Length: 415
Image (cartoon, helix red, strand yellow):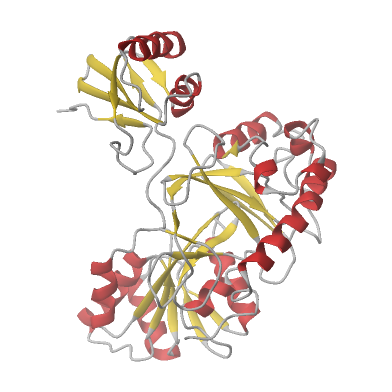
């Protein structure tokens, strides 16, 4: 498993960055001209100017809830809210739905969701049979994996979800090389096989996603002869990152530009700091520019020990949308960012909500080198103005706040 899916994986980082930034202006221009939604979102933007990460960071972030709102507003005209550049027919063999519902188009390109790369890293090879237990209805997960497997030259058994005994029987009789699906369902299948006293000797590898895959469960599978790896993707973007045999974070896919931004803003954070994962995809059928996934992660330092040279992320670390209700008022991360942005002395800010329900207390914790009472007073006034709520301010030394991506911490007791 030390080989690579293709030569893109071990190219020089400078070459990768140059290729991505060369493709970026054309993708922005395509989105502006062919996607009515981005014609509006990027109005006034000159695509020829978007040739660096700094220029990209000045464009607005489009978050999942905004995509849903545009789709809902334009349902009578188009199901995709003006984001897709292709329509029903030969260009779009399938349409999927994720919760909302948000509708996602699938185009015709080989390995449309780019999952083959993750499968290869998990040990799958051409000529093998894969037992695919991701759902084949509504959501794109089943099709994502099947199209990737076909691109690799693999055959797929579309197991889908449920019917555990039948899954065991099919695995025993067809002898697939491995499993693709959620880790929890694989555990159920393995336990059912043990209960039925049916050996599954061919099942030696697995690509797992859509759920947490802790080391304890990884070891549980290894004890039963199954080497499991995880990947991370979304219904909007396809593959984002995948695990390798080094098991040190997830390596980013080759066909997107990934940023980590401070939750509630579009501002990139320093390497290693936890923030929201924002993706610009090079998919021309669904050209999402600075799409906020709503997921928290962080960039790991250095390359993957396997020799893959793309950046790595820690994996999924929670949700970036930390909106909470305080004294009957919604407070969201963007408001905390707006408060902090007024004061250059503020390095990081975190709003802690404590107390019991109906007796909420707010404390704005601020990392700063300035300890004057005047700054605290000004921050309290800005908090009141922006959130319409009173709160205390606590000035702390740089590096004091946890690096967990939280901008709003709900520490209340709900007993």
